[in-house]
Image (cartoon, rainbow, N blue to C red; front, side, top):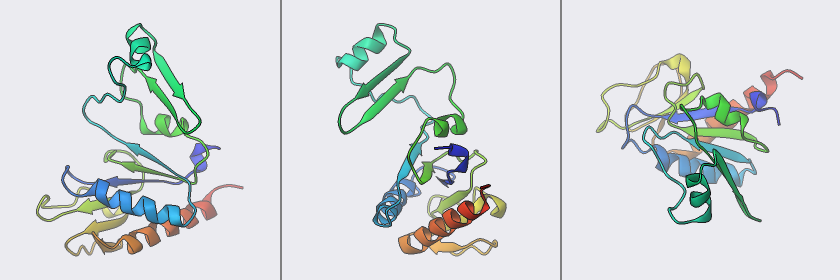
Length: 173
C-alpha cells in the first residue's frame, strides 16, 4: 500500500473533554459496517507506556533494544524508542492494508480535520474552514463547512465517506 494514496482525517478539538474519543468510537463502528479497513493513530502529548514492567518485551527493552516487536496470530505490536516525536506522515508510512486512516489529535497537522466542539468546554473553533471536512458540535456553526450535531454519527460518517470518494477520484492513476 502506498500511504500517500490513503485518505487521512484527523478528529481534533481545542482541548480534552470535548468527546473526540466517544465520537470516533461510534464513527469507526459505523464505517466498519460499511466494510472499510481503518487504522487509527492517537496522539498523546504525554509519555505513555504500553508495555508492562516484568513482561518479556519490557525486559528486552530495558536490556537496551531500540525496537521490540511482539507478534501473535491476532496482533502485532512494535514498540520503538525515539529521540523525538515522529511526524504524523512517518507514523502513517508504518501502516499497511487499510482504506482509511483516522487520527485523534494531531491538531497542528496539515491533514483534513473534523473538529469536535462542545460549548461547555470551548468558546471558539480551533480550525479555519479551509482545514475542515466538517464540524461536530453542540451549537451551530456557519463557516462554510458542514456542521453536524455532535451525536449525528450518520451525518459525520456520510462526510467521511464522501471525503474518501473525492480523495479516491483525485488520486493519480
